[in-house]
Length: 433
Image 1 (cartoon, one colour):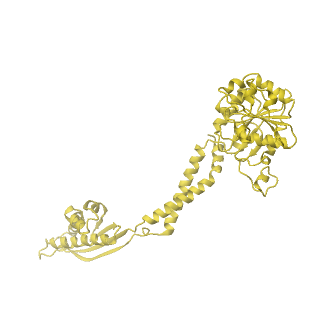
Image 2 (cartoon, rainbow, N blue to C red):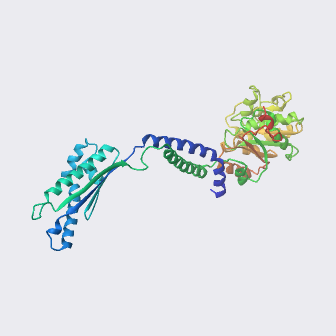
Image 3 (tube, rainbow, N blue to C red):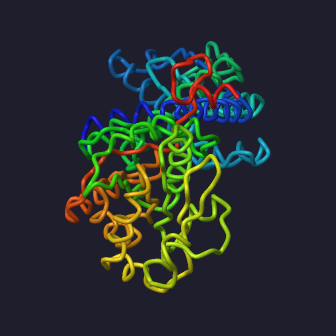
């Protein structure tokens, strides 16, 4: 996919990306606020004084012994014999193994720091106080001095328990986190949509695939003939073939409103005084026949099969384009359309009408429209914005070229109706109603 195409797709999906960002931000922010729980840290500082300097002649040896003794207390506090009773005392909310991983001990000369974090304030406070009590008890049992006093004595110990900054509930923090994550999700969504979107989204996508003029841009559904007036006007300038101005309107795939576009364009053209005939050449889907409300009278299939006369099959409609319906259902429409009967019928009708508009079957649904394109003056692809893939439209254009059909322009359907404030738009009349 070209970089320009990705760039256009980004502009197509920005609104949905904003919606995704807003929804994601709200969901994440609310979830974060609802699940936020404060974390408490309990910290103890134990300051020692040493009597080892009275027992050792060498001060360095005394200092080394004191430091190793404090380190041994630190190691002792991480043993199961100490942590198991503490875990039981706090009601089993934490295990001895989790305590061993969570408790931080920092021994240094004459100082031992103990730190523990937990989501419950009382648990954090109890664990650290129990560890301090264990150190006090251990200090009292070590007494190698001559007067049987402990080598180390605790001068001071303090325990402080407080909430960890930034862990308490905060609407502003949850909102900021939700907004940040929402933006990230929206950007990922936007770029994925831009890369994976393969559908025709605007006229630039069309122009990148074929060199043809846009004869009309129609909404879907088309609510009035006025919306097709620009298309009808442009069809009048189609160059005739063998004296017959015949135009085939066919979509690439079903659902692009080609039949509706043909019907309203033909009626708009007839309203301007042009002798116009509309032919439902989609012998499978019969869209125009159904939209016009015509009955089960003889039509194109009957004429081509020799079961009806052309004059009898054409239905005159007051103030509108005359209509040649699809006619009776047939098993193999391509067989009828491939014969000379179609060209003969168009030649006969060309002497009676200024413009003949044929509504064909979707090109990629079969060979029907390709067979017709070889017999008409121009073929006009009807392109449903957001409905047809770029690859399918490219194949449509390629097949027309292989059939030696003349590309007479393109018609866009499914465009948004413009505001009635612009009276010069071809869709302004419809928008003002």
